Image 1 (cartoon, helix red, strand yellow):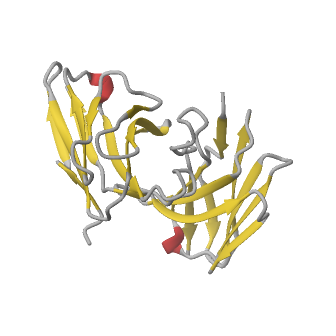
Image 2: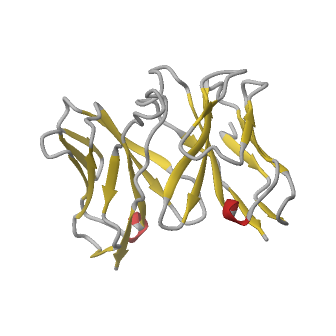
Amino acid sequence: NAGVTQTPKFRVLKTGQSMTLLCAQDMNHEYMYWYRQDPGMGLRLIHYSVGEGTTAKGEVPDGYNVSRLKKQNFLLGLESAAPSQTSVYFCASSDGTSGGPTDTQYFGPGTRLTVL
Amino acid sequence: SQKIEQNSEALNIQEGKTATLTCNYTNYSPAYLQWYRQDPGRGPVFLLLIRENEKEKRKERLKVTFDTTLKQSLFHITASQPADSATYLCAPPSVANSGYALNFGKGTSLLVTP
């Protein structure tokens, strides 16, 4: 079991460029999440999904889009990157048996993104 | 809106002592709360979940309390070791996301020195 994996681990973009971050989990979890973590701000929820084909906005969704075409994958897209999106991005998954809040979230190793 | 507060200042303690970390929440009453550990450069790892009717939960050297009157959870590490040095995050459920997600605190950094 690899758990939750994220691709890539590091990326540098120029302002206006686009990219997609890939999150994959092999635990057959229903729920998946994308967070960003900035110094002094803690983890903030960007988007989440409660099942294949569903997505919902979190606390800071502007400038990001997501897709969950397959249960095991959750993609985070930046259409036109801005320096304010420089951050560490974490993906997480949970099995969803309790409806979310009491389920353990399993996190990936993170993607460090710098936008110049 | 719901607010979660953890000590922003790092907690430095000596090996063998008990570390106590605080999580205060305002403007809502969560029925449960999770605690995670995060090491530098890594994603958070789940430690414990406590429900409002449990008051106290233990796992090896870890103990969590949940005081719904004070709106506070305390996280204790007894007989602390340098390997316990990390950032600890509390996470009650997020009211804003229909209860599906967690609302993470900013975390408290713990440094245990030999």
